[in-house]
Image 1 (spheres, rainbow, N blue to C red):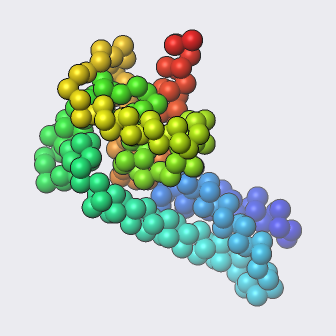
Image 2 (cartoon, rainbow, N blue to C red):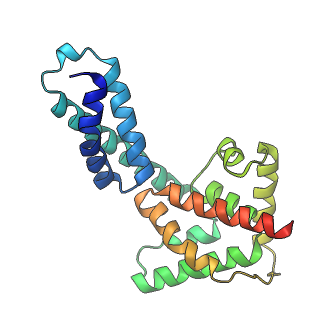
Length: 206
């Protein structure tokens, strides 16, 4: 069986395993791709059972991915004690209803005080520890500009004035994707939603 045939045969199975383990479409695709990249570099004559090897590899890659995410999440909770949003979300002793209510209120506050790009950069940098290089790619802004926007966002959050938002329902739409990003590592959906909000706001201002 050729390499192309092997990939075509086992890709659906590996993707199903990865998706079930990590819960993110994009992450599952990346993990399966990495699994095949590794498989293409090894001596196939030493592999007695290709299917078993690929399943074991994709499973290990998923475990490594989840461990890495949990470590990031743990560091994020311990290092960002002064984040207004984080302080509301990190207290897991609250009843479920109160927790989600507090989180919703925090997102509404960010929505009212910050412009979409400021909110996006603040959340991705402060909560998910994105590097400025990543923010530059997402928002099409230079690193220094992203740094300034992040600093401005933090300053605005300490101010008393609150702007009138024309899209009050946006935080509610963002709430579910934010929870998925925090709990299951499904960052792609959250990033896409933020990017769409920024693009829409930019077009409206033109």
